[in-house]
Amino acid sequence: MEFIDYYKILGLDKSATEADIKKAYRKMARKYHPDVNPNDKQAEIKFKEVNEANEVLSNAENRKKYDKYGKDWKHADQFDAQGRQQSYGGNSNQNQQNPFGQSYQGGGFDQSDFSDFFSSMFGGGGARRGNQSRFKGQDFNAELKLNLSEVYVTDKKTLTVNGKNIRLTIPAGVADGQVIKIKGYGSDGVNGGPKGDLNIKFNIINDTSFVRDGNNLYKTIHLDLYKALLGGEITVDTMDGQVKLKIAPSTQTNTKVKLKGKGFPVYKNENEFGDLYLTYQIVLPKNLSDKEKDLFEQLAKLRTS
Image 1: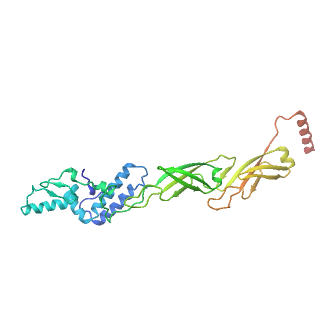
Image 2 (image 1 turned 45 degrees about the vertical axis):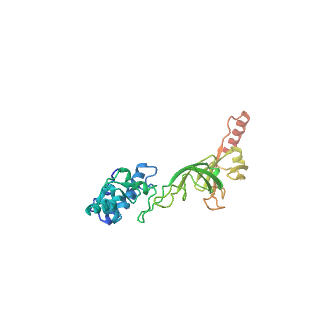
Image 3 (image 1 turned 180 degrees about the vertical axis):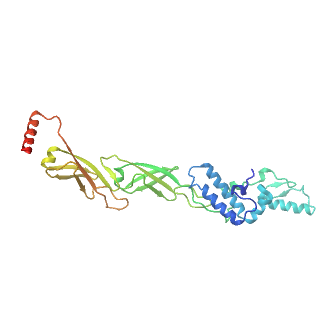
């Protein structure tokens, strides 16, 4: 197994105190945590190395063995036993049996005898120690594209994230760019920590003739000249159907009308809506006939007389 300098990983030397190790570990764990470095494989590796280093150096007994035997620290008891046996004249060539169920001869260890601590901590079968820090798993991020007309009402959608189907209830009124967090649908935690979350960002595409601003809607209504001058009745579209409006005589261009409660639903506030604002734009007639021109000229004379 390749030698890993745990002190170097934490930016320390062998004179570091227990408090120094604890402080360095917290700093490095924050720096390389998956939530801070999403989808960064190198940071993920460093994060695991930092946890491994802390596992060894924060335990006084393990640290003592590591300082003495380096990468072979987990076999310290066997080395010490062999040393005592030789001191008392024991036969060093006699086959012995180590606590890990593998044999050695004459104190000579083969590389295959060395258990990989890194593996046992992050996916192997090694026993967990009480001083391991638990970390929340990495969050997943997803984007969901919906039409504006779709989010006018509460709806259900099925998303496939990391091979899993997730049934979501999307409340009416969700906004473009809004992020909804679904707890526990991220990656698994570290050392038995809680799962990460799923963050869904909404990309709302306007497929309507309205302009949305918060909970309010805006729309321009074109009026013909005669309706604006003489008044009358028009039918306009809203998000939930059509309504009839009365047009007062001599309505001016850019006149604004508010339809209370005909705007967009307020997010997670059932039966509460914004308003719909209509702006009238008067459209002048084109390609007038000779008779129409004559009538307008007569009207102009009447207005100036």
